Image 1 (spheres, rainbow, N blue to C red):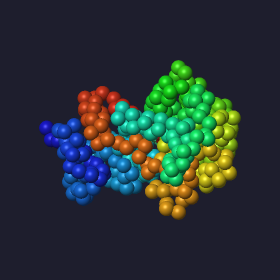
Image 2: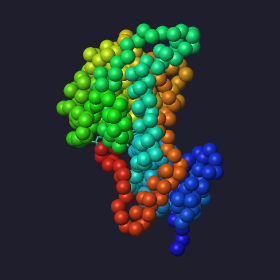
Image 3: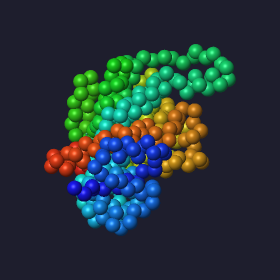
Image 4: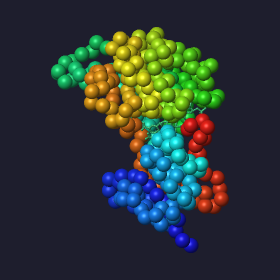
Amino acid sequence: MTKSSILLNIKWDGLAKKSAFEKALPDHSFFNLADGMPSKEQLAEVKYAIVWKPEHGFLATLPNLEVIFSLGAGVDHVLEDAQLPDLPIVRFVDANLTGRMVEWVVLQVLMHLRHQRKYDSFQRISQWNEIFPQPAAENLTVGIMGFGELGQASARALLPLGFNLCGWSRSEKSMEGVACFHDEDGLDEFLSKTDILVSLLPYTQATHGILNRSLIEKLSRSGPFGAPVLINAGRGGSQIEADIIACLNEGVLHGVSLDVFETEPLPKESPLWSFDNAIITPHMAAVSDPAALAEHVALQVSRYEAGEGLQHLVDRARGY
Ligand code: NDP
Ligand code: OXD
């Protein structure tokens, strides 16, 4: 049987990452665009592509491509290609990635709850400062916008810490201990209850710019900090940074944690870098682990080749 080929566009940091794929998919040969452009004949052998931000128009040049795998959970970077072939797109859904996102979300929520940034600044000037009130988790509501794989897993981790929890999604959901809201109709009530907003929304036409001043002003101001906290690890295109900066300056926001930005890397001149109450991370909340990604692709390829359905398929009409 001839090997079918898999094309990747991943910049390896070391051979170990490449061998993770070769180990998980021993019956396939690999071409990595990061190692140079394969020949026309090699490109014609490619049946599967595993991509992150592929060059627009490139996937359409692969005559025998059958399935597109996103290297990440988000697929906006694939869907924005106007010449994208009409093929199944599988996104990355995986316990390792989910675990990393849950860690990041819990860390950020606790950083704000426990005033960690302020204590860091007092430590730098050797100042013993006990002045801050210490609300308990049960005094705050964390509202999670985007109540899918990552949002629900984050809720499951925050619940035992004692936070009140709300979730907001497109379709109706239920989870014990979480007040679930959905659709446009449920948004304002969800926001009015939320002291700490966590956005794990995919980037689509509907979520473009959704984290703006008007939305921020609908968040609860009756929580222990007197102003809400915004945490976003979904996509930068969902946030209006000029509004966030103004809200931080005016005290309309108590603090923010942002992992994603309108422009990445975040430009050096962005005022976001300089706020004491803004925690900035470089789009690393949940990086894709090569071995876990290789296992995920191997499972889906074996299902596909056995005539079973692919899992975690993207709905192009919804955009995620
Ligand atoms: P899911 O598809 O499982 O969840 C998305 C959630 O958002 C769903 O609950 C969905 O509603 C909801 N949603 C989508 N559009 C709307 C809308 N217009 N109104 C209301 N709710 C909406 O995705 P994941 O949880 O796996 O991932 C979410 C996003 O996280 C990714 O798309 C990516 O952008 C980002 N991400 C960021 C990473 C990082 O390192 N910063 C790492 C990994 C992911 P419904 O359930 O009804 O479909
Ligand atoms: C993802 C990401 O979508 O890392 O997985 O942003």
